[in-house]
View 1 (spheres, rainbow over the protein chains, first blue to last red):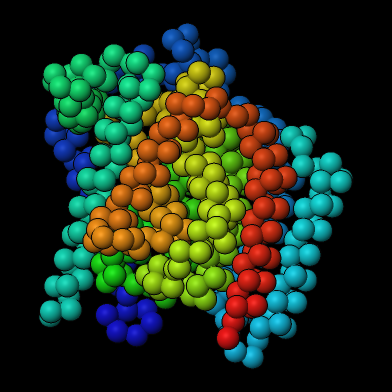
View 2 (cartoon, rainbow over the protein chains, first blue to last red):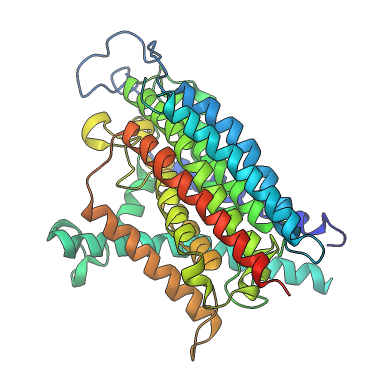
Length: 123
Length: 318
């Protein structure tokens, strides 16, 4: 319970409780349910007709540019949090505010660039 | 010893809230939707206002056969509901309902909440990929696409509050809250709530589930208790999102006359009502429309909110 990581022991205990809740629910289900599998029942559901081909069909990910953008900006956004707790402390004020506008400028410019390049569309 | 007992008591309360509040939200959704859309079904079971419907659903889920399709990746398929559900339980532990009444006061509580909430969507992607079903696969892909859209505005809007309060601890954020934060952080609040709706895959952002196009998306192949766990995850998610919005933007326990706990629960309940109201009022967006909304509206709005928060905070600094 002590030190910086002490409270996380409680979080760990709660995680264990969560696993117990899920396992308990599934156990109750196991005790109460019938179990009579048939090949028809285990077939893949495609609205009642026999499944065609495989479920893991080849498909095109049409939003991969968004994924790149997201990863870049999300990494940026993480750095905002430690900065947010101290930026207005005595002695920082104006300087950190200027830094913030530099940061926001970079991110906004990035979004604007992506938009002008017309990658903010479902390719 | 007393310390351990106190922590245990807090955990019991968190688990109780986790098991009860989502059911109340689900029951409220039945009834509110029934009234708004004149649905007869949810008003029948048990007589008065169909009070027994939820219990009947629970009994049905508990007795249903657990079917894992032959084509599925069994282990991932079986694990997915737990991955979808447990993160919301973990987030509940850092949400304060009254001064001193919180599971654990983590220094990085806000960061913890955002990080752990992000894990929940993995359950949906796992379910979609492991089912070996075309509808599920499309649903999983849409879930992943949605993640790209909502996560950034959600995080930026939340960090604006952290800047305003100068701390990441949720109880301290509520403690620092003043009434004039309502107009000051209004844009951030709207961005956070809308992005949160997209995270929960609730209408109008329910394209990963989209029952009229891809059956039930990632949950198509699920039955019985595993399906019920996914449903519980959805309603626990609603509670978590509304409680977080309350704590970050609506001042949590602050309010006249009534005790703090009541204020937190009232504000959360009001937001839950809004979530249900939005569901019956708006048609579903397309996945690319959500991307457009997120990158052209929500992200710039969140950045503007950050600038506004920074300027006001520094100007007001003593």
